[in-house]
Amino acid sequence: MPILNDTQLDQINLPNSHYGYTATRLDELGATEYTIATIVADVSGGTAAFTFDMESAITRIVQACKFSPRADNLLLRLVAFDDSLSESHGFKLLENCHLADYGGSLRSGGSTALYDATENAVASTTNYAQKLAAGEFVSQSISAQSQALGTGGASQPLVF
Image: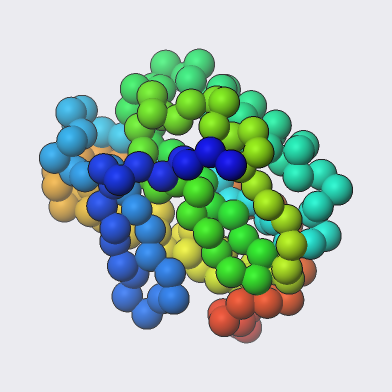
């Protein structure tokens, strides 16, 4: 399995959360605005039959992002979840996301910590966008996630 995370990324803890995230240090960013994106992959036991298809989809998403006119200003994060959350790589510049690294990167098993994954994806993307804004960067964000019934994890669904 490829090592997708970079030791050059900062470890950031989220308040009131079981999980944090990693991200490119602000002083390593050269532009004034960025788009930050999070891909969230459900790798619970029920997805084992199509793990290869999910890896292919992630590879195609990354490849499509590279064709964007804003590709030089895109920071991408990949998270996988079953009964717990696993950050495959934190927010890193798209130029550092190598297509070959995504094949064989997912392992299926366990239940579905959907709420933990959703909470972390939204909180980390929002938190990093706030850090970018505080550092006088302009940012916009995108988050993508698979659908499943949440059957594991510490978080519970919100009831309105």
